[in-house]
Image (cartoon, rainbow, N blue to C red):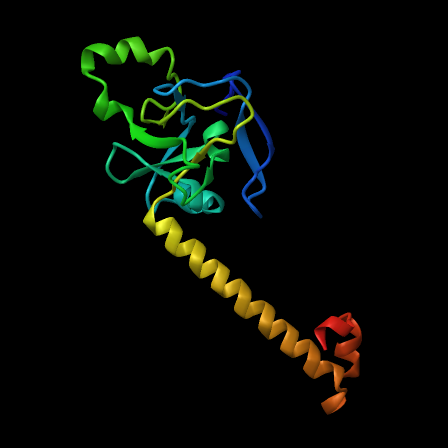
Length: 186
């Protein structure tokens, strides 16, 4: 068993300011531009059994500097929510292995004990209690739009089905009893 801890004292977790996002990550103290948040996680090979077993986290996996591998976030970085707004965005993902010269990597190893791959880099000063927001990229935007369209179509279909059952046709009152029909659905 691998033990992973999140020891960064600069953040706290509470309900996100993004509608329907669930929890979000917030600054406990002001965070200066140029700071970073380590992406703690595990590396899994794309398409492997480990990748399939962590499919619940597919929307949150990060690319890795190691071709064919992705990072499954396990700490605070996994709670950073998406925004399209450039004004609200205060972090971006950076591959640190590619950016830190080999002579400096030893210096960063103690700070980045788990990932050694990627960090969330702070693009601007973040005041206390501001939510930490990034952008998951174009592919995530496409998937989010598809999910919203699917939810809208599904809700419409569900409402039509409930209305159909309310008419009591085809001897379906038993099924209609299983689904509560309210006036707003009729």
